[in-house]
Length: 190
Image (cartoon, rainbow, N blue to C red; front, side, top):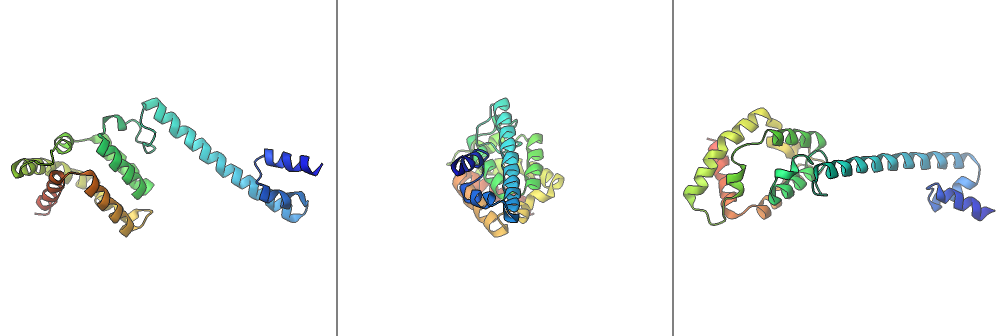
């Protein structure tokens, strides 16, 4: 009989470590049942969220690693942009990530030039791309100033977020793109 009771509780999703407390039928067993119920609710919410995310990925035919909310935007992103988006989803708070998503919806006309900048691009080409980026980035900073300091509300903490972002940028962008980013920042600060 005891084995059947244990099996019934295990079939209900109760961990074996909690079953002993529950079968005692005392005040502790009621608390154990409440704890199990709370854990099951949390698990169900998590599973429901995962199902919603998978449905959005399927609907937009996005890659499985696309952060939630970006499924419809992911089709037009390069591999490098997708990788950077994954990094942003890790270091940004949910509020900042939503603001970033809104900025992506607007888009801009210099992404392709920057994305296609070859590693061995000459200084004149780099300068031309940087100069084209300045008005776009200046407008984005005016419209969404919080995105300039996305590390400030990072769940990882400012230092860790900056370190992760720095490593990602160094790994994802080629030398010409890095020069273009540096020159763009210099032009913006003049």
